[in-house]
Length: 315
Image (cartoon, rainbow, N blue to C red; front, top):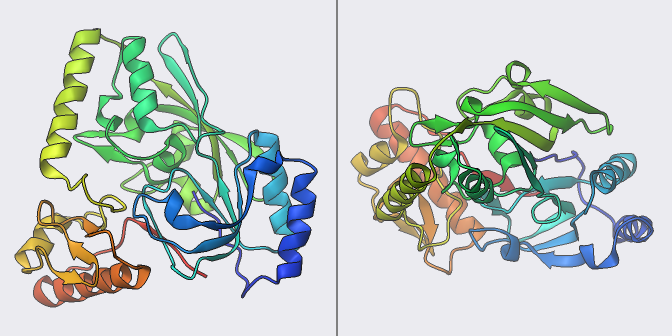
């Protein structure tokens, strides 16, 4: 769920002009100058963003996007930063965060309407509260529904495409449209949202009536499995690589002999080789170099190309 306008650098005067315009339309406390991105990512890595904005309405989001496009200021839209690796040099431009402020959830019958910044875990808990089944698989995915739609997130046999009804999206001219499930073209870690560079505004999810005890039991079981198999205790951006067709990335990495392999403060998880994690001291350079090393060594040994699933933000 990102947009990067191609341009080299941003002059301080231009950022000041954007700040002045935003102060007239957005609560000032939602506009931060020189904000550390390490405070907004699960990797805990990232330098200062020139400008960090958290709009509270779709109208405000539209205004910010149009303003950045008009002034040709680079910008990037983020959720809760659970799949991001941000350069230690920071981001020269505007980071637009939709998490928290644009995260309302509404349940009507068997349908859940969730704004793009709503956490998957909160949507799953709402489904549990209203005794709706079908969303249990997403309870432990550490992201927002907006990001999940962009990449058709999935786990433990379930995918967003299994439950989505439609989504409202916006292009970068500010035009809003509703896409049906078919128009979303959800595939393995892809969608028409990603292909067309749309911004997710909200989604409608369709579930089935279920029994509270059974739904809760399934959610607890999946949570336990995640804790047992994934390095949740260490900073990371989740699963580092997409699954190559016919293989599992984690197994390829393990069979290459890279379990525990370390560069600086970044290492291949001992618990699950599909995760690159930080020991708490990793830099952007450490992680990026480790990712590239893994790709090279797996390619040399098995002839398989690994492609990152995490998003890398760097000017």
